[in-house]
Length: 115
Length: 109
Image (cartoon, rainbow over all chains, first blue to last red; front, side):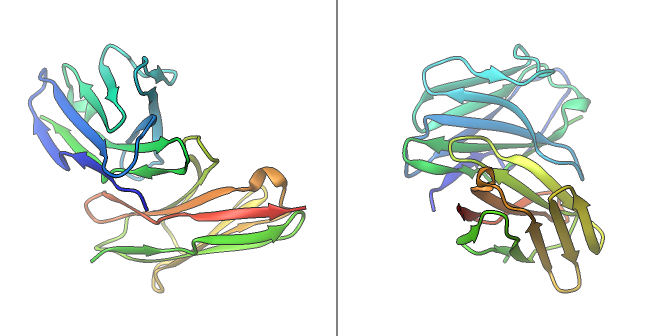
C-alpha cells in the first residue's frame, strides 16, 4: 500500500512555544490530507481536512488560528500547533488521500507533550 | 514487531451478515478501534473495545479477545451504503496507534 511518513514521532515542548508536524506522502500525490487528534483511550477526532493549494476546512470547535495547516504541495502537509499549552498534549495523526487512491493512508502519528 | 492483520477484501450480499476479523500482535494493549471509511472520505469511528466481550451498537457489533489477540466487526442487515473500507487499529502500551491495512467490503444487491 501507499506510504505516508509523519515526523516527528514524538516531541516535548515548553508551554507557549510552537511545534510543527510534517506529513509526507512518499509514493503518490495526496490531494487531500486529514489531520486527527486522539486523547488516550478515545477515538480519533478529525481536526481538519486540507486540499492541496487551498485553505483547510476545520471541524467545529477546532481553532484555525491555533492549529495552522499548510498543504502547499501534493506530497507535503504540515500542522503547526501555535502557542502550545499542556491541554494540547495529545496524539496527532495525519492521513492522506488522492486521485485514484480509494483509501486514506495514515502516518505513524506524533505524540506531543507540552510541559 | 507489531502487526495487525485483516483480510484485504470481502464481498457480501445486501441484507446478509458479514464478519470482518482482525488479529494483532502489539507491545502492550490499550484498546482496539474499528473505523469505517468511504472512498475519498475521512475514516469515521465505529467502536472501541478494551475489555473482552461483545459490544453492540445498532447493526454493528465488535468483539474482543485479548488472550487470543483477536477482534471481529459484525455487520448485520447489510445495506449498500455499508460498502466501504473497515480499519482495525490497536493502541499499544505507548498509546501509539497501530493500524491494519483495512478491509474493503463490497456489497452486492
